[in-house]
Amino acid sequence: MLHRIKNKIEYLNKLYNIHQDCDRFCKGHSVKLYNWSRPFLQDMWLIDFIEKRGLLADKKKKRICLHSVFGPVWMTRFDNADGRIFVERENLHKPQFKDWLHRYLDDDRFGLSLGFDYISHPKYMRFPFWIMWNVFSPTADYDEIKQRIDQMDSVDNHSYDDRKFCAYLCSHDDIGRRELFNQFSGIGHVDCDGKLFHNNDELKEIYNDDKLAYLRNYRFNLTPENNNQKDYVTEKLFEAISSGCIPIYHGSDNLPEPEILNHDAIIFIEVGGKNDAALSMVKELDADRDKYLEFANQKRFQAGAADIIWEYYMQLENRIKEIVANI
Image (cartoon, rainbow, N blue to C red; front, side, top):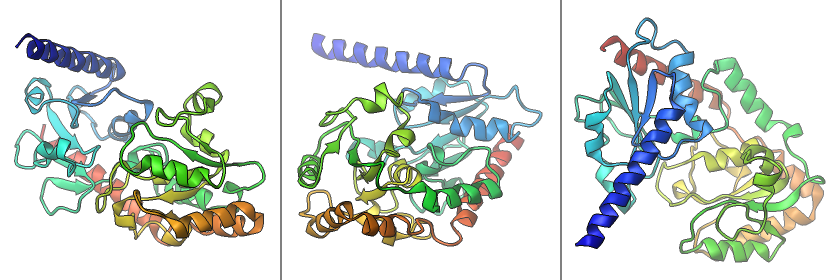
């Protein structure tokens, strides 16, 4: 009994500390983070999208809360918000997140729910998390999105001679991750700057945790999703593309964002699989500069990708304007 009480106190203390961190992070802003994980700089994306695009207009004294899945549902009763948006930052089909599959879609306190799945509901919008992390600016217009895609697709974004073999960044072990590490370590040295298989400190010591700058030193980025779920695509794949790496990827049933990405420019693997074809290709490309550059210089984005991403921006802007108009 005492053990259960102690665990409960530790859990509530952890929630309180994270809540305090988020309060400090959002100080001076009308948009707040709630039931969030500990905030990173990139968590300013939606805050900046709302505030810097002028979506609060003459209602700057109103409080908008962005809710996520890293706290109990009952905490939503204490957010003191005028408007609420649910932001799906994890794969809600995983057992530990299944209690959030409601996404507040039938909760009148929430005006909008953002997620990965394709769902038909008046309060839901597919707005995948990768748009909000590292690659595309929250204040971008259509031309800037197009320029960003052109830059990622450019020959200048890819090189061979000044890059090491492969980076692999992850925090937690599970079935298949160690096997992936062992498989690709048979080709060359795989640098692991995350908690898992940690063997390198450059990400923190040289690049101050700037992942995009760090990845520009590698030909390949071994970047499987934390779990495989149809339509679930996070920032990992787009960070590899942004940094000019060839992505070695598993996720979204290996059909990630087919209207946006050129799958011929991605090497697909299966976590837990033998991956003989992928291993053979990576070995061949890494050993031959010309073949590597021929593969790396393929367009990573489909024609029309900028239009689709811009449509995401416009839909989100219009939906938030609706929320603001009603508070």
